[in-house]
Length: 77
Image (cartoon, rainbow, N blue to C red):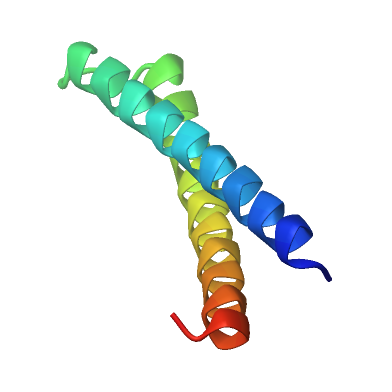
């Protein structure tokens, strides 16, 4: 894999991770704005989506770390 290709993959992975984090933060804001006392279907749906997005973000973070490690190994930074 060329340097440019690896760097581009890193940038794409970071962009995807940032978008996922923004979605998680947005859902957390929505969850806080809902009534705490009620167990509404919307509340449950948001919690399920948050659970899934957290797993996705974890996987994306691992991919970013892998690309950063490869770049560091290749170029000794």
